[in-house]
Length: 78
Image (cartoon, rainbow, N blue to C red; front, side):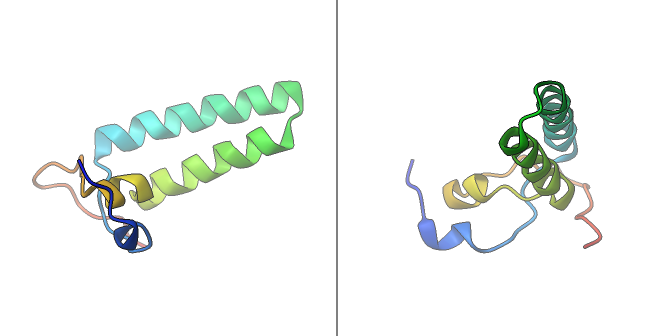
């Protein structure tokens, strides 16, 4: 499997609904842990994961030309 660095910067709809839900749950967990241990860097990581989940875009998936979108899923509104 090859990785194309030029595709990483191009935003495309490549995260499906199920993948998005798992990413949002993981981001919420990261942010809860960050709040408990009062770690700002970990909180920023959680916010970043949540933001990419809302955008339904993963730069790593873009570089690998991978997508978890199933037929009939709608792209994000923004």
